[in-house]
Image 1: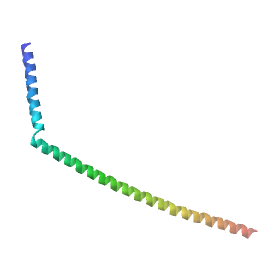
Image 2: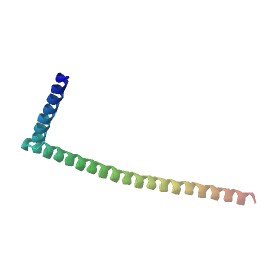
Image 3: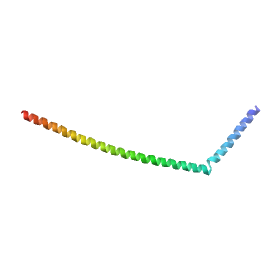
Image 4: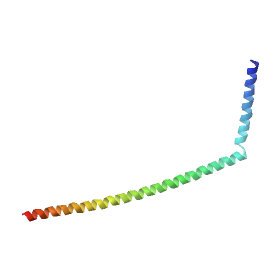
Length: 97
């Protein structure tokens, strides 16, 4: 039982030692540089993602406008075809009478 007690004390002391060293390590100047560089990289990624999203949105607007134009042209052409068919049908009926 005496060994078990020393083992617990050793684990506690090791935890305190590593905990203290970890706090010192995380608050050091080198760690601050790492945090700063990571934050700068994250900001660059954010800017890149936003720029890409803006480009995709602009392209989507262009595609939508082009699609609307194509449909309008098609509607006009179909309207002309329908008008031509109506005129031909009217001419045929006039010729029969």
